[in-house]
Length: 121
Image 1: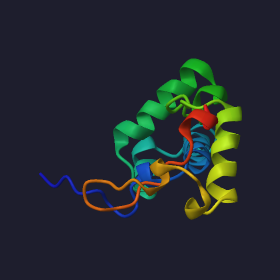
Image 2: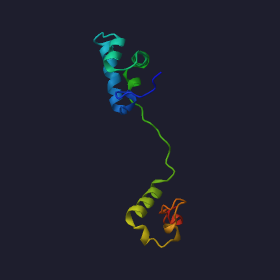
Image 3: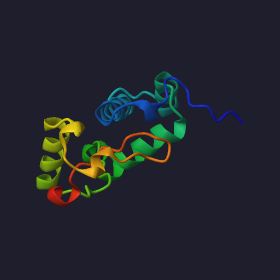
Image 4: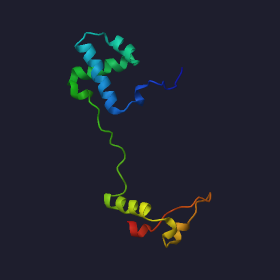
């Protein structure tokens, strides 16, 4: 079994493009009478994908085919903290920071630019 991802794999498409692809596929089936398997072959998708879109459309209409927001992980820093961190990183050269933390090094010798954590948060 070949598990490699194809170049034209739908998972590589952004959400808006995938939404338009779903709309076009269902429109071709609903309005033009194209067979779902033909749509799948034309778009390079699996039959089950197109049939799934068609089933969702029949249950809930066009809205269920719309792209949904991907929530992601909630930020650990507040907007204020992020602004302070940004100002520290962009506004200062680490050599200007008068802190022993700014000269700390990781185990592999890479400098850790930490700055003044107490002042940040």
